[in-house]
Figure 1 (cartoon, rainbow, N blue to C red):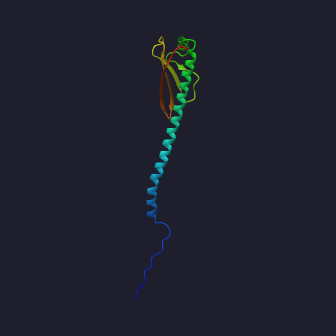
Figure 2 (figure 1 turned 30 degrees about the vertical axis):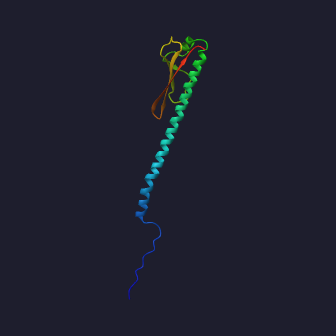
Amino acid sequence: MKKKVQFMKREGFTLIELMLAVAIILPVLLGAIGLNVYIFRATETSKRTTVALQDVHTVIERIRNTSESSLSAVTSAYPDGQTVTGFSNLPSEQITVDYANVNADPLDLIVTVSWLDQGRTMVRNLSTQVTKR
């Protein structure tokens, strides 16, 4: 008489199967988390850049409104290379106005905004021309 060999019924997973599953899922999960963090930081940088450019456009609009009287009123209200006050929407935000030639008509100017973003100094420049209206 031969004895029948019975195999044990398995329920669940072995330790090796679990370790392989974790080894496959873990890098995918960490990659997804890393991508989420990167997208969040990029979105925050984009928001801050938008705010900075809105502030620069506000300064340019103020300069254009000042130019209705004369260009000398613009250069006296917004001195060359000086910081424009009243803007603190971003960390360490500074807005400066620079002129190529203060006696020119139209007046070529560059408005520069700088701020801190995630430990780095960000800078954006916009240039325009202003003349007496």
